[in-house]
Amino acid sequence: MPAFSLPFYKVSPGGNPTLLVFTAGTGVSEHQYPHIAAKLMRPEQVGAEQVGFVAPSAEKSWSLTMMGGEFCGNACRALAAVLHLHENAPAAGSFSCSGMESPISYEISRHESGMLLSRIEFPLSPDQFRITELENAMRLVDMPGISHLLLDERLHPQTMDLAWSASILRKRYMLENREAAGVVWYAADCRAGQEIFRITPVVWVKNTNSVHLESACGSGTLALALYMRQSPRQSEKEKNESLAAIRQPSGALFTAGMNADAKNAVISGPVSITAKGTAFVEL
Image (cartoon, rainbow, N blue to C red; front, side, top):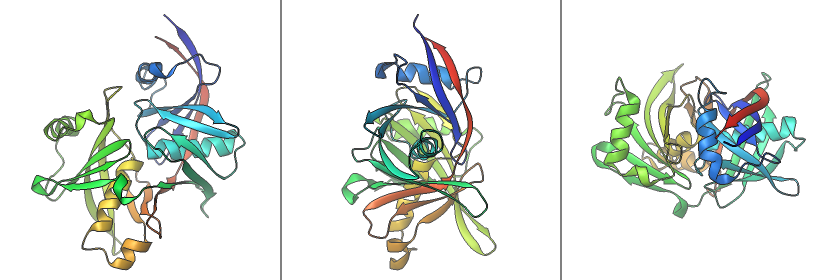
């Protein structure tokens, strides 16, 4: 059996523990990514909700390939922080990501509290995502690299076994032919007179057949923001200029949506790098 020594960073992009494996010089090939990721995610190994594989793609540039070839907004935000803080990359730059044809632009900054913030932006024209109204007021948001089924908790309360409920819904709406699919329950919380939506995402990745009740989800946040943007409740000014603030299961607050010219999608939120090391994997 081949054995690999894999340098990695473990990152918390507002929750959603993410492993970023740097593949240069490791001998790992892309067809092995799903098998390696499945092992690394186990609690007795390194433990995570997802794994991305990072390689240099061109001079001073990088490529991120997710474990199932999907797109992951949080992994992109995590990589931006790692590149800037540990790989001598500037605070603003770009890299490529699986599931996306265009480069991902990023910007790293600090909140006045000292909290590290990671913001990504990428082209997303109206013909690159589709929002479909389904029965019982459910909405399916198809985006490059991932799809999300949105469920309003007022109409579809959370069940005792969310993973099982999500699997039933994935089968019912034939989502298992996607690279990755999320089922996202959402509800509005009112705090200090301000309405902020929160999400509870369950994400499945086809190539690893992994299911996680994620503690944060960047693409799920964006999916809800895209739906909210077309909602009749939004004024034209809000639709054109604002990003939606959406709370994650971890308690972190993300902002997401379309930028002012409605050409680029944006996902922004806190991030922290929690570990750096070497993982030993046998296949």
